[in-house]
Length: 144
Image 1 (tube, rainbow, N blue to C red):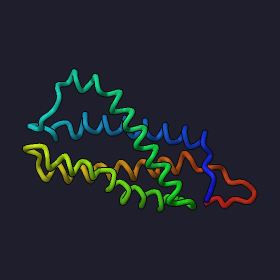
Image 2 (image 1 turned 45 degrees about the horizontal axis):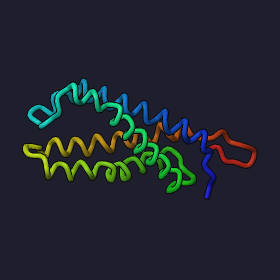
Image 3 (image 1 turned 180 degrees about the vertical axis):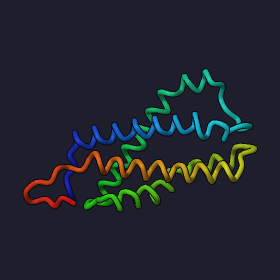
């Protein structure tokens, strides 16, 4: 099993998590702003007060996702990162499917979009992490 460069992993994982968090917040504030119309939500002030918790969950979840990628795909590569994003991302959004059952007036369309969005975010996470984390090739290390 390949050793993980812990400082490099922590920096790369954190940077990727922050970028994906910002992209997701931006996406929901612009393109998907009306997607949750009629959906039960907290008041805006309460949502803003909980943003630090949301940020912390992103950092932990995405760093664990990246750690699992390193363990499951020791040879890595961009194709592996994208594939891990697709199928690993599907498992990341399974809790959304459970909330779908419990929340009244949630549509199949919203659920489908959440699943696709989650998978796309995880593909972006995997690719960005692979790009940032990849150590420079040493004399006995392949460059691919």
